[in-house]
Length: 76
Image 1 (cartoon, one colour):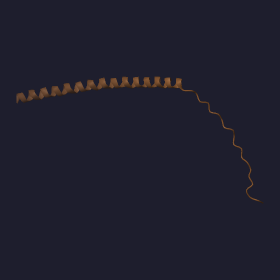
Image 2: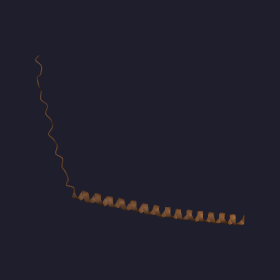
Image 3: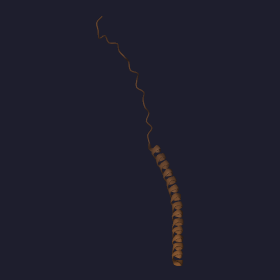
Image 4: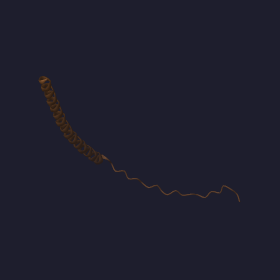
């Protein structure tokens, strides 16, 4: 009975240590994810800036207004 209690206590300690390890790993991964997202945003912004420097501005010319002609299709 005593050995069973000791075994259960050790099991609880292992479980708690494993849980603490998982929680610290989760925090570490969340920090790394946040850092990677920031880096990705910065690289995307930089890439967009580089592309905009290389783009030749396009000037759209206005078309002349359409002129409607009167057509006599029926005889009065």
